Each structure stands twice: as structure tokens, then as C-alpha cells.
Amino acid sequence: MKRRTFPRAVWLAAAGLLLAGWVHGGQITDRIWLKGRKEPHLGQISGESIDGVKVGLATFSITGIVRIQYGDAPFAFREAEQHREQGRYEEATRLYETALRDKLMQRRWWLDPNCKYKIALCHLGQDEYDDAVKAFQKVLGEHKDSRWTPDAILGLGEVYFEQKKYNNAIQQFDALAKLAAAKNFEEWQLRATLWKAKALRANKNPDDALRLIQQIVDTGQGGKYGDIVIAARTEQAVILMAKGQNNKAVDLLQKLIQEIAPSVAQEIGDGSETSNQRIEATCFNTLGRCYLQMASKAGDAKKKESLHYEALLSFLWNVVLYQRLPAVHAEALFYAAQCFEKLNQRTRATELRNELVQRYPDSTFARQVRPEGRGAGN
View 1: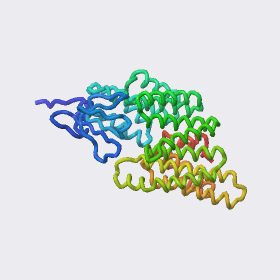
View 2 (view 1 turned 180 degrees about the vertical axis):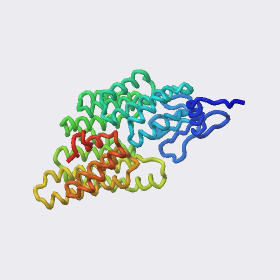
View 3 (view 1 turned 90 degrees about the horizontal axis):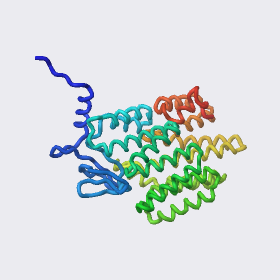
View 4 (view 1 turned 90 degrees about the vertical axis):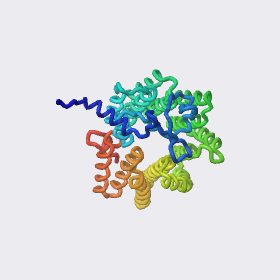
């Protein structure tokens, strides 16, 4: 009797459904991680929109959701998520596009906007700004009521920010703030305000930027929106750097790192979220860049060397401890290599640059250290 065979795609799809996880009564169960909860909420999602994610008779606000694991996620989608989280954007994009073509996928209302938004993020991660603009606009044009709509508006603003089109960026951040106000999403309003402050600072308007930062800090008094407030105060340090007030920036960053340390330790112990760890990592990279800026202005050779050493210690914190955060880790590798170079430890600098190119080949920093890039960043 001839053995019947099935196409490879069918086997992969079946394996994907089996590996997805929880199945109850023949219905695939999704997992939703909410802020403040260690264990996920289990249930089948029946719909998503700007107003919330529907699970059974309950609706969860998108601002309260940390992460979702879809029970019927295609194999290609899960693989794409892993590649994107590792900073391998080109392969991630290919896999997201494969998932979009999955003809066995039934609940396309979550897959389509999700994949298209993540593809836009991959273009942004590779500095493919024109493609990123088109991809974010596609999400906004085709999925006007998706839970990814606020993210896409913010993402489009980030692209314009990276392109130095600050007026266009501010228009997007204002649009997000308007949408957030209409939906009573105060957290999204604060995120929009934070990015507007960044755009104003980059557009050489630091005083108005500081005013917006203070609004965020005032709104978050009493511990509310702690992660956004810390991020805003980190941006405050960047603004102080732009104003040439490096000592104040260093003092602020060191204070922030001390303040956030207990929350970081709790996150590491729980293994539930990484928001405070990301902020700590950003603080250390910012602190390192501040020391580098101070070193560039130091006249005394010993003072310059001391500042390069302080910068190196800041970047090495992330090089060693935050390898699971690709964006900050790639940045730390790039600048730590610069510091080693300036401290005449060229072998170590080369080692870090090689690690950067091997681990994050699609990153902005990797392109800068390749022979065809903009040089070694010195």
C-alpha cells in the first residue's frame, strides 16, 4: 500500500497549532499578560480594536496589556517574533510576510495588522525610512480601528524623527495625543508628549522640550506611570546635555539609576516584565554618551582618559547584563568599542565590533563599523 504524503506546509501548519499551547474543548486559548500580573489570563480572544481586546465577556484596555500569545499563531509568525527581538530584521520581515500568506489562518483580524505593524518596525530598525513610512501608513489606512493604531501613529512619528523631519514628527505626536484624549488613554497622551519633547529638543528648542517633560513628571506624581516618568527624566538628561549642562545630566542619570534599582531587581526576580530594565539600560547608555561628550571637551589628557574610562564602565554594564535587549545592547557594543579605541585597547575594540556585526547585522550601529559603512565610529 502506497504511503500517503502531505505537503511540507501542511505539516508545519499542523505543528504550529500543536506547539501554540493551551487547547480547551477544541478551542484554542490565547494568553494575555496584564500589567501587575505575573500569570497570564487564559481565554479565546474574539476581537481587537482601539477600545480594547475582547476575551469572552470581558474587555481589556490596550494600555493594560503587556503581551499577547495567540493560540493559533502561525509557525512563521512565532519565528518572525524571535528574529525581530534578536534584531535580525531582514529575516523577520520575510517571515511576517510568509505568515500573512498563510491560507489556513482563520482569525486574520489579529494577524494582518499585527504582521504589518511589525514589518514597519523592522524597516525602522534597519533605517529603511521610506519603506517604514509606507508600512506604517499601510497599517493606518487598512486597519483604522486596530489596537495597533496608536502604535502605528507613534511609529510614523518616530520615522520622521529619525529623518530629522521634526515638524512632520510633531504632527504625528499631536495626532496621537488627540486620539488618546478622545479615548481617555492618558498613558498614550504622555507617550506622545514625551516624543514631542524629543522632537523639540532635536529641533533646537530645549526650553519648550523641558516644559513638556515637566508636564509628564507632574502628571506622574505619586507613582503613577512610573516607567514613562523615568523615561521622561532620562530625556531631561539628554536635553541638559544638549544645553551643555553635562554635570547636571550626569547627576540626574546617576540618581535615576539608583531610584530604579529596586524595581529592576524585582523584575529580574519575577521574570515577568522588562520595562524597568529597558529604562535602566537606556540610562546607562545615555550616561556613557554624556561622559564621551564631556571627554571631547576636556583639555587635560588625564581628565579625558578618566572620562573615557567612566563612559566605558557605563556601556559595559549593558554589554554584560543586557544582551537580551538588542537595541540597547547593540548601542552599548558600538560605544564601548569606541571607548576601548580611545583608551588604546584596539584588540578589545575590534572584538566588540566583530560581536556587534555578528549578533546584530541589520542594526544601524553594525552598518557603521563595516568597511562599506561610515567607518568605525571613532
